[in-house]
Amino acid sequence: MSKFNLSQLLNDKSKESESMAFKVELIPIEKIRPSEMNKYTVQDVSELKGSIELMGLQQNLLVRLANGGYEVISGHRRLKAMKELHAEGNELYKRVPCKVIKTVDDVQAELQLILANSTARELTDYEKVYQSERLQVLLKDLKASGFKFTGRTRQIVADMMGVSSSQVGRMDSINKKLLPELKEEFKEGNISITAAYDLSRLPADQQREKIEGKAEDVKGGGETLNVVVENAIDDFEKRLKSLTNSFGRALESVNSISDLFKRAKCSEELSALLKKMGASLPDPAEILKEEFERNQVTIYDEL
Image (cartoon, rainbow, N blue to C red):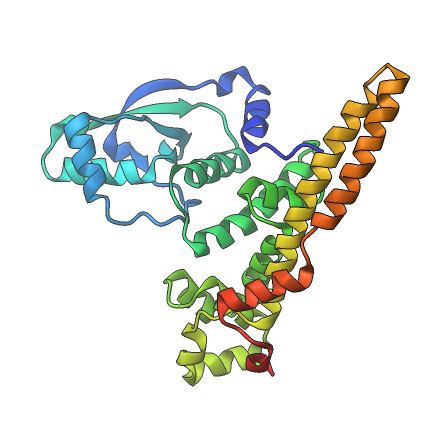
């Protein structure tokens, strides 16, 4: 089964209406506002300001009509940089070139926003966890609206984000079970994603104990035994999947041979290859050992 392609999805959705084709307009900067759907960090833009001032705007903003003005879908950091330049007296940014999408619903707009942020820069762990949650919600909304796609939602999100399904599962645990106070600490970068996941597995009263006076336990970045084992399983699954894919391609090639003698010969060689592949499969015990050594964790630490 081919991986879910968000870009293709957006293109398909765009074809539903000719009016969705965008055009470039010069828009007064005071009429452009950030999207309330944007939960990604928009931090210091001083370097971006310098680049825009020196070389001009290299990529137009992507906006949509909203509430008598324009809402940014892609380009929040660029907008902030240009607003600061305009506030400092640079009249070149009184008007901003924007690609305006005339008709787009909230689901499409947020998918565009997520796509833009996931490809434009390195996300924080908190942003990845947030992205995982929103993608699952948006995919369910798309299904409810009649859009057809197959596969489990968690695996589709994993493919879109380039992570394993079990990693998305750990993100779900953080999203659904971590107390708001601890989630805020995670957002601020005061606890690692590993610590956030470990805490989310605790009952609410034990999480609250951590909030009330055991900060040193929260801020540690060490992996727990469960996470180390899960990482090892992920690694094993990836290696096994790679070998399985290689064998599948070889089998397809053999089946396409019309000459019976050549096909039989290739089948023998393929059988020998399969035995070799089996012998080369990683030993789960060795993977566990590597994970324990990498994270400096021993079973005794967990008992």
